[in-house]
Image 1 (cartoon, rainbow, N blue to C red):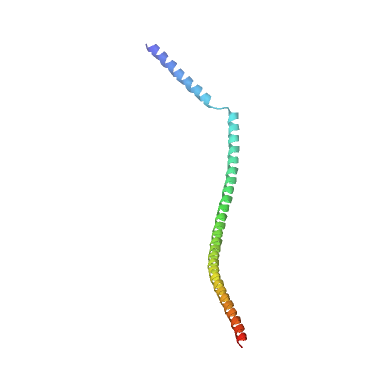
Image 2 (cartoon, rainbow, N blue to C red):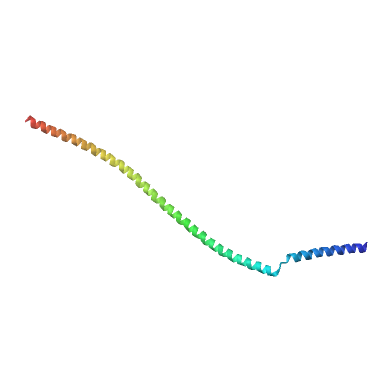
Length: 129
């Protein structure tokens, strides 16, 4: 039993050691593909840095455009409000002008009636002499 137990243990230890050695061998990559991976990773990192710089510049330009659009909108709002105030003043001026025109027309009509009456009186006075 002792020998049998020792043999089993030895076989078990050798089996486990073989598994560990096989796993370690399988995990260690070839040095050449590893160098290529490192090289391609560095290249990707450089490309990502340039992409980030371009994206940052694009974002800054977009933010500048947004700020400019806001300023333009505010100016447009001010102009629109001023135009609306002008329109409202023009409407009130039109109302006043219409009132004045109507009064002027009434005065003209009255003057025509008075002139007609004066002509009539003049003709009557000439006949009556």
